[in-house]
Image (cartoon, rainbow, N blue to C red):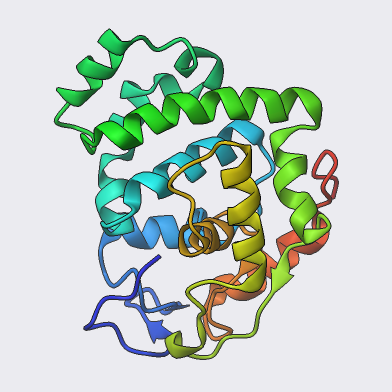
Length: 215
C-alpha cells in the first residue's frame, strides 16, 4: 500500500455510504482489493508465497501497478506454484522476459525461481505459513490508526523478518516491503479505525487461529 500525494489523511466516505481508508481512492479495482483482501489474515502458504513475490516485484513501483498485472503474473508464473517454478529453465526465464504482461526485471524473475526453492525447504520443515506467523505468535497485531501519517513504513519486527528471510535466501524483501506484506496479509491490521474494514478484520482475526484457521 502506498499513499498518493492527493490522498486525504483520514478515512473518507464513498458514494455507497461506507467509510474507507483513503489510499485506494475511487479506483474500482483498488477499492475491491481494499474491501476484500487487504488486511484479511492469510494462512495459506502458497498464497503467502505469491504475495511476498509480488511485493518484491512492486519494489520501485506502486502496488496498483502490480495489482493490474496480477492475473498476467499468475498466468506467467503457473499460479505461483513453487513446485513448478523451481523447475524453470534459463529458456523459461527468457520467455518471461518477453512477457509484456508482467514486470520484466531479470533479477526479480531469477529471484522468484530461487525463492521457490527456499519456500519448498521451509514448507517441508515447518510450513511457510507457520514460519511467517510465528513472528507474530500466530496472532494478528491490531493497530488503532486515525490518519495516514500514523502508518509506519517499517517496524523493528519487519526488520527482523526481513533479515531472516534474506538469511534463508529470499531477495527483494527489505523491511519496508515486508511491512507492506504484513499489512496486506492481515498480520497487521492497519485499516484506519474510521474505516469499516478495521472492525471487520479485527473480528475476523479473533475467530482465526494459526492452526487450521479455526473459528
